[in-house]
Structures are given as C-alpha cells and as structure tokens.
Image (cartoon, rainbow, N blue to C red; front, side, top):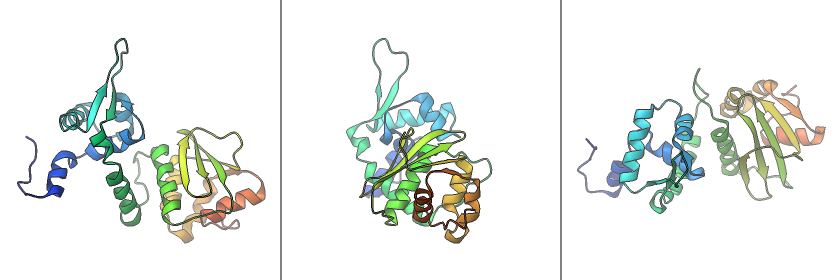
Length: 220
C-alpha cells in the first residue's frame, strides 16, 4: 500500500512520490544519463531486483521515469521525464547538505562507486571555492573502477568517466583509499595520501597536493 501522510503540504505530497527508500537514488543515477535495469542495479548495490522493479514501477506511475524501448533492441532503458528532471536541483541540494552535514569515512564493505566519488570531489572543490590560476586536468585511475578525469576550466570543477591523454597529473589509487582520504579531517589527509601513486612534474604534483590541502612533505 502506498504511503500517504494525509497532510495538506507540498513537502508531504513530494515525499509521497519520491520519499520511499531508493527512489531518489534512482533519480540521482538517471540524472546523469538513461540507464538499463542492470546499470541501476549495479549502481545502487544493495537493492534487490524485486525492489528495483517495484521502485521503477512506482516512479513510472508517478510520471517521473519512463521506459525507452526500441523495436529490435533487447534491453529496455530508463530515463527521466521532464518532471523527473525537475528533481535535479533537489538532488544537488541534498548532495550539498550531505557533504556539509552527513559525510563520514566509508564503512567496511560499503560499496564505493568511483563515478559518484568523483562527483563528490568536484562538488567539494566547487563548494569550498578551490580555485587555480589556470585550467588543469587530472586523471584518476581507480583499481578497480577504471579511469576518471577531474578538470578545472578556470571557473568550475567537473568530473567525467575516461582518461585525459594530456593530463597534468595522473593519480592511481583504490576507491576505498580515495573515499577515506576525502572524508578524513584536513590535518589527517597526508597519511592517507601514502596510498596514492602520483605521476607528473613536481610542480604539477605540488599543485594537486596543495589544492587538496596536503603539503608535499605530508605525502612522502
């Protein structure tokens, strides 16, 4: 039975649509791009196929998600409707609030997705006003997880999947080490940087370390 608050309030009505467990995380993933059922299952990690099917059905019924199926294509893709895309500012606001008030180091065995982790790093750098005097590109190779690129265009930081051939610095690490690093206290981050392999000229490596609030002597 669908939960109702029986409360005349737009917040209550919104939560009746998207307040169930997993619903906003599905929206979060679909805000990046349309995805298959298996993609969503992998990204959410601990959701079961039964619950994912149920949540997708509820989001479809609410006009937030729609199926994208084509004749001759075996797989069904899911994407947000215009109504669903209107949740973008809500998800971004929750991410900012969580970053400021709810983050903690990863728990043992907790799923860490490099793409979501890199989005969090870019959000952190933008939120805390980290600026450089020039555009930069850093490649981060996650083992496991593959390569991602973190870029500063002179105004804002952004992340994307894939590796930049001419990156200023290449950083190789594990998702767990990187997640532990970015959630550590500022004065403790140097010790966690020992798990990073950094490749680049000394001045570019120093630039990365300073941007992430690590002195080069802390990373040695």
